Image (cartoon, rainbow, N blue to C red):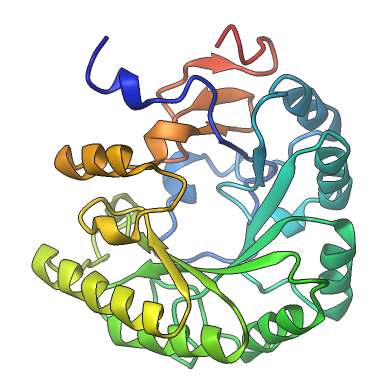
Length: 290
């Protein structure tokens, strides 16, 4: 057994299902157009196929209904959420927020979905062409969702991508979260494969940012996590201390340990950024055989 195998779970905790690859935005940082042809960028997963996948992964507790697309565009998204609930899955979506309105938010709350994540890099107008565009209505609907939740459900998390020029703005997002009783923020590292124009902070600046943001969020009672093993104090709390130590010492991506990604064709890969590394197909196989 390799040193890596002993830390990889027999059954993943999370399955991300690409229910659609369509999107209502065209953000500069997104790699959708690098991974699909124009003909392929108009696909929704068939509801029956989705049900087959859920039935073939009975032991995986968390289902992320989304991937390289905007899940709220899928015409059957609420039927998919309901199917997850009837199979005792904990479901969540990550949305860019541009399709949110009061009726949609009420449906999400009533659906029983466990978590809604909204992508957000700025809380005011900006001129970064690679980030999500700013629309004050997204801010307004995040606040509305935070207010009408029932007993704190669905859990609301802000999903932030770190750019070279938005580090200061993320502290404003932490303030925004505290003011609106949003207790969770996840910061993702910018993926550079989409464009040569994308810019990360240098490693030392990135580390120093995470150190300050971690302390600031802790003072404000906001749970800050990151997928970056460079700064281990903010790794997700689903990992044990020995796993965190191993991830940090080997400079590994956390997603490879307990996550699988299922694309439109049913192919299973370690994550959305490794489309060529299929380990099986959930349209034809069950999770045990994979």
